[in-house]
Structure formats: structure tokens, C-alpha cells
Image (cartoon, rainbow, N blue to C red; front, side, top):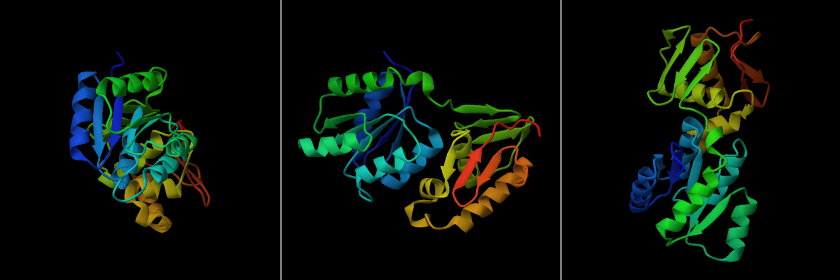
Length: 231
């Protein structure tokens, strides 16, 4: 049995989420839930799940658009849930980057077998809930961060921004990806708003935009989190 995976379930039907939670927790997994595309993208960025179970029929966006957004910045395995049983729909989802596809209604034994298969080669790559990057320690479970052993006093948005950047350390994270995940799709053009938060976060980290230790700017594109090595 695969244990210890963090699984994000994005489905607008609360009974389905409860049904999946009971079965997945019994298998030893940690389950986080979202009932909308917006919340799902935010949790995917903030919590770094090892697997995403994604319903295509979400109230605020088509599940395929969520999948395409995810594939812009992460290769986490995605298992699609859908009432759409036609071959063309399955092919479209798989071509968009899904690893597997389950048609509703489905049997739980089959679902869990699909989950085990997707996790088999993925568990070793899951981002841990605690990141240590040089002198910086970030704990996603209790939303705390410390630098050189001293607690950082961050707002929720500042912490979410820090976690998203740090959990994708070394990789470019675009402004659009950050705004959409943390503030929602309606704010994808609010780059000035993001710059304010990045500046606040740099101040609390004692970071220098001109000679960064943690957050490097890719002008006009986004940000890249560094290893925190001494300058």
C-alpha cells in the first residue's frame, strides 16, 4: 500500500469529496479538498500535493482549463474524474496532461488501484511539508517560517507567496501563475499588486533585489527562488 501521499481532491460535490476522503485516509493518505477551480489552483500551489484528483465539471471553470494551468508550472500526476465517458473527451484530457481518467460513477476498488499506480513512482518526489533552504525553514502544516532560528511574522498571503516560490525552488514561477493561484483568476493582470507583496517579503527575509539571496526577479516574467546561500 502507498502511504504518506498528500492528495488534493478538486470536486464541487461535497458528498463525492467525503466519499473519496474516507477511502483515501483509510489507505494512509493525507487529503485536502477544494470545491472550485480557484480554490483548487491555490491549494495546488500552496500545499504541493503528490497527486491531484480533478473533476472536469467545476462551477467556476472547466476542469480542462485547470489542468492546463497546472501543466504550466507542475508535473504532479492528475487523475481526472468525469461523467463524460466519450473517447474524444478522454483523449482531450490525456493530451492536456492528465495521467489517468475515471468515469463517474466508479467503483472504489478501481479508483484506489488507479491512485496506487499513479503514486508508485511519484512518492519519492513529493515536496515535503517542511522545507529547509539554507538558514530558512518553512512549515506548510502550521504556516510558519523562521530565518536563522528567528520566527518571521508573515501575513497569510505573504506565507502563501513564500511557500509557492520556495516549493518550486530553482524554477521560474511566472507572475500569472502566482496571481492566479494565490489571488484568483480575476487578478492575473495585477502585477503591481504582486510586486508590493514581493517587496514586503524581501524586507522580512532581509533580501536584496539587486543581489538576491532568496528571491530573484526574472524581469517582466516572474520570480525564481534561490538556495539561500550566503552572498
